Amino acid sequence: MSLKMPADQWVKCANCKELVYRKEFEKLLRVCPMCNHHQRLRASERIAMVADPGSFREHDATVISADPLGFPEYAEKLDSTRAVTGMNEAVVCGEATLEGYPVQLGVMDHHFRAGSMSAAVGEKVRRVFARGTDKRQAVLLFIASGGARVHEGLHGLMQMAKTSAAIARFQTSGRPYLVVLTDPSMAGVLASYASLGDVILAEPGAVIGFTGPRVMEQTVRVKLPPGHQTAEFQMDHGMVDMVIDRVKLRPTLRSLLRGMVGVLPRKGA
Amino acid sequence: MRHIPLEQPLIDLLDTRATLEEELLALQDAAATGEDVLARRQDVEARLGALGDEYTRLRDDLFSSLTPLDKVQLARHPDRPYALDYVSYLVSDWCELHGDRRFADDGAIIAGFGVFGGQQPIAVAGHQKGRNVAERKARNMGMPGPSGYRKAVRVMQLAGRLGHPVLTFIDTAGAACTPEAEELGISEALATSQLEMARLPVPVIATVIGEGGSGGAIALGVADHIIMLDYSYYSVISPEGCASIIWRDATRFGEAAEALRLSASDALSFGFCDEVLSEPPGGAHHDPAAMALRLEEAIGAALQRLQALTPAQLVEQRYEKFARMGRFLETA
Image 1 (cartoon, rainbow over the protein chains, first blue to last red):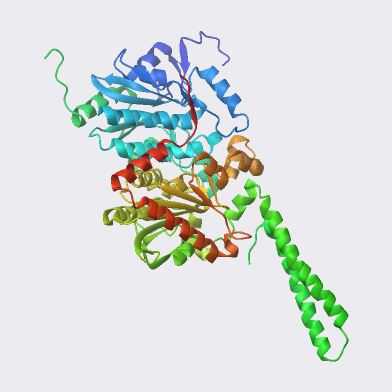
Image 2: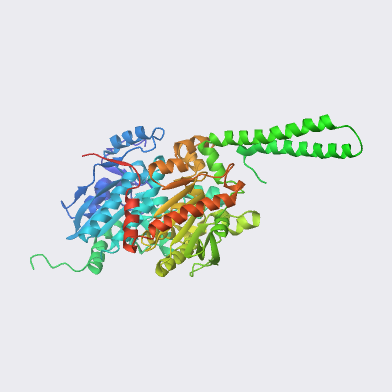
């Protein structure tokens, strides 16, 4: 940018490149008022938007990647990612209330190694469902992931089976599993727990697909039409229940919980 | 016989043998006309005899020091036995079933019922590649779309309802990576297959017979007992894909094959499979019947053990088995 201006007052939309007044951008939950681009969120930001204030209690923050294969340069990459993001892993898990409903919450964060699924991520997600099963509480996950973490080989891949088995068991709890697909929701994560939601919501414009567009274009040697593998595309093909603007997410989740878990008694009643 | 680069020295020896055998025939013809060829005949016969020993020595040498990449190439060998080959050895009264009951029949997955070991009804679901151009096209190179996995789920669930064990055979480079597969929900199909396998109330035995390629493989892999053949591999991504993602250089696939620890022995050491079956000299394609016999014994033993468990115990143990998979750290 050649124009000098206080960087903290203005935000440039990653999609339409328009400048947006930061205070307005934050009020709109980091959605561009010009083009409705939903900016990728950090897990902490997402939790602050979704959980009732002060209700979130983190679990399993000490479950971290072990570099099980001694994969070249992986340990160094993990160290630098942890330093840059201040996070331990690509998912933050815990419990919270949402409009008074107790939920087991898991929020993936694309900023940590593209939100890729390590053995630690899979284990943390498994424990979310295990707690949901034991406590008979709804599970709410936010997906933001490029897929399984290649550096962990089968240790990553097997998390697909692990989490799917955990959901099979959770389905005996009588509680719903709600999942929100955000940008991006791809590959091994989409082909396991992200697709097994009882209700699947998606943020507008999120890229959602199994095979990355670049790989697919190389394989089938056709240029994919614009909008292929977006939230709207998945909605059109019956894979998603609602494409929902971020501002409407919390009231929608509340309605889903009321309709699927039950109506809570009014406070003080 | 088709071959892979690893086998080239052996193929050269076989060519030399063929030449010597022709020479020998020519000498026999010459002897019939009264020519004295005894010395030359003895020489050729001696060389032929030595060649047989050399072949065995060279083969054992090559196969005693296979790199991970060699094993990937053996797993992809065009003559390697496929799922239906093993079915023909292991299963009598085989009836293949077709179609996902929604949309299509996917040739990249075979599924059906039959009898194992002469007595035991079983269901089978497996990836299936093709032997020639037409078959490969019909079977989409063994890369199934959603219909394939939905057919497999239909047959596995039926086995669960009927109380019969399920055998799966894993042999795919990966699930279909086409726009059509996306439109029909490949991710949902893969996820659902794993979820449904996790709760099958019957014994499930999976065997990786060739390529265990990523999500397309694990979607048939949620089993109580997991067998790998020695020259099969199981990996989160192909070595080529790994090299191009990590190093942006697909030519470094040999390095990637090492780093991914994708061989059967690696999988065993990490607990991702329960046993590795050694292969006949030169690989399963040199003696499919012998390989099938070893597999039959391994499956029979696993079945016997698993059939002592109740449906609830099977589902519980399967959950626990996968809950333990993958190494991570947990600090206090």
